[in-house]
Length: 208
Image 1 (cartoon, one colour):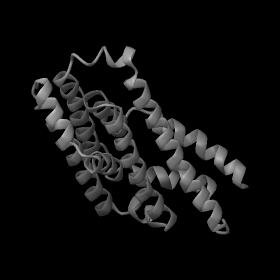
Image 2 (spheres, rainbow, N blue to C red; image 1 turned 180 degrees about the vertical axis):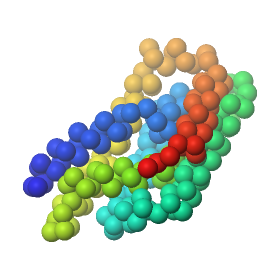
Image 3 (spheres, rainbow, N blue to C red; image 1 turned 45 degrees about the vertical axis):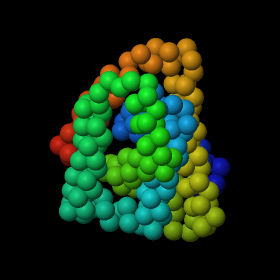
Image 4 (cartoon, helix red, strand yellow; image 1 turned 90 degrees about the vertical axis):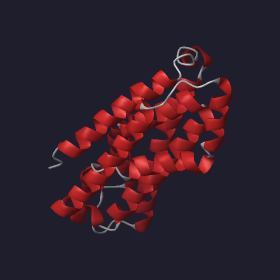
């Protein structure tokens, strides 16, 4: 398979995977609506960087090992699910704050923390190993040049960032954001419930 054909396959599959509702989408939406566009973009960067972890171990062939190891899958599943439950708990227990309190929260939510939240949300996704095994099986071959592998990886990360940046900009538009600005803590609570549901689903659903 040549490079262009491989890129076309990856673009189609990964765009659909990125656009599908999941922990990353819920997290980016919540961060954007409650903290603004900058925080949403930083969170998107973190998610993209988290994706690099999956790309690296997939390129090294570790994804196949993890996908066939019940103990490794179980550990990743529990850690990832518990992290989603933690994010959900933080959202559900949020309280209505005054304007001054919101400003303090925004200051505490530093750029590094925003990136870190997105990074962990994606890096701890327990379904990623199987997904990347499936994806790379379609385009990789033993004689694939290293340059092609690097291009595939960078392109997948670009698709991820482009999609979530688009979500951030959409939710940051005044016409859209105005509908949410008075909801405040209710946005956190609704997305928190979604996070808890996703976390429980991750922990209880079989991956094979």
